[in-house]
Length: 127
Image (cartoon, rainbow, N blue to C red; front, side, top):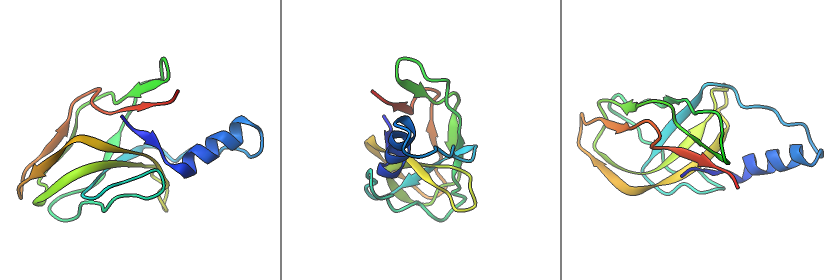
């Protein structure tokens, strides 16, 4: 389950209480894989090497305070690594990190492996 970054939470709170105007992220949102802990205040160490690239993350419209991903997401030809966390960025030229999550269990990948997340495997929740 993904959680808001501190910066994104502050932007939403400010907009909700009228103390600032909210600027929506630049879509599409991109899913990044990390090999060290991400948190509300800092991104984890992003995977690099192989054919790794951030993948588009499409989510359903929110219902009951939750929004799951809409389709299969595959990272192909990965470098050897252990993925522990996820970070979600927008597509701005200077990407803004909005969400983060720890994996339920680390994923150990060999060189050339693929890592796939099923539809509804990633969920963002408020409330």
